[in-house]
Length: 178
Ligand SMILES: Cc1cc2nc3c(=O)[nH]c(=O)nc-3n(C[C@H](O)[C@H](O)[C@H](O)COP(=O)(O)O)c2cc1C
Image (cartoon, rainbow, N blue to C red; front, top):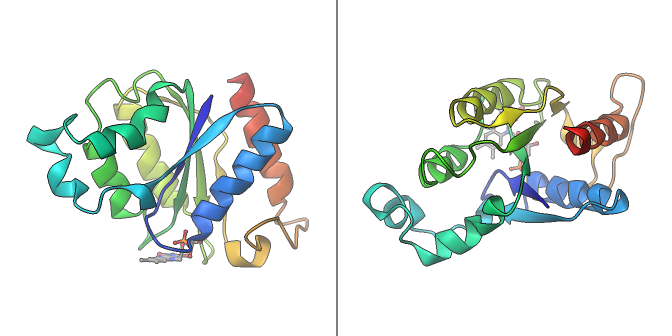
């Protein structure tokens, strides 16, 4: 089982649609997955599920339970202000240290409206997941100008500079073999 983390709590996010797209691709390859959507976080989790409350919030525990059953994670992050959304860091700060992601194999996916494709966001996440003891899949999927290439359900406008379908297939194949 693979857990796909949709890395924003923004309503109507492209990131969530991309998580669904990855799930569909995995299904086509016969791999089961579940989506952990940060939109589902309890609204007060920064105060009710962190620090002295780590492990005590039932809603938070239920949400993160797929991670425990997964050997592999796909973390999809949009680029917000040159990095990943703050909600991801707060979420990670609520996980039990060091065991929740230790030893997991993690594929990173970055989306942006602009030209960077969340390159810094995925680098920052790579540092953090590495620190937490996860193994990072070398192939990151960086997808700049996402709105021009993904209509919410499928990849559009693939061309010689942006072969997102091939990139996603290759990344998933690499993760399955990882
Ligand atoms: C708070 C915020 C900050 C953003 N900052 C950037 C940015 O620094 N660079 C960029 O290219 N796009 C930026 N965007 C656009 C997102 O990267 C873009 O919409 C992304 O592809 C998908 O985000 P979504 O999952 O929230 O829809 C920002 C969007 C939001 C909501």
